[in-house]
Image (cartoon, rainbow, N blue to C red; front, side, top):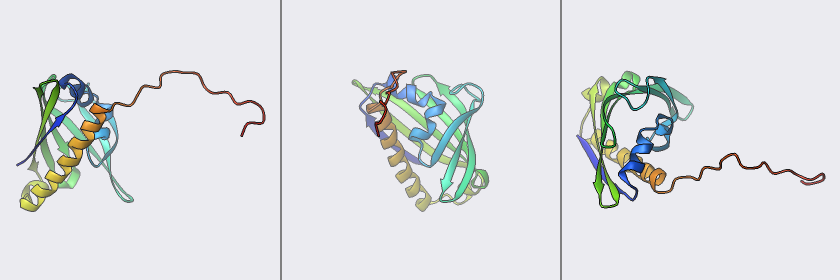
Amino acid sequence: MAVRHRLIKASPRRVWSVLADGDRYADWVVGTAESRPVLGQWPQVGAEIGYEVRFGPVRLTNQTVVRRCEEGVSLELEARAGVLGTARIAVELRPWGRHCLVIVDEHPLQGVGGALHNAGVEALIQLRHRTMLARLAEVCEHPSPDPGPGPVPVRAHGDA
């Protein structure tokens, strides 16, 4: 079982706000792009989001469904990866002073991924988690400012 943790220098509330926003899934989950709601209200149990996984010119459409949610504390997901099968991904948040200790636990459930699960696959999952937790930390610790509806610059005649 691939278990990894990271101390994120943001409050558990801030980390949860990122996890609870299905539109931000691709911001922190490695290998995904363009997440979008498919069913229900993320992160309620049964809600699904869809996303693309890109390998060079190859694009696969996958979905992740919420299997368990304890608001502000834990989120358990089932990622469906087509012929590769499914995986359980559990994300737990623990207050750690002013910060948040995030623990990720992932293992294959069904399909080829489960049948071929070995120490090599486990090592790859650990590398993926390291990157995923680094991305989550970046999103939580350094949120991009909301530009808001500010004024649009107007160019004078003759400006390049």
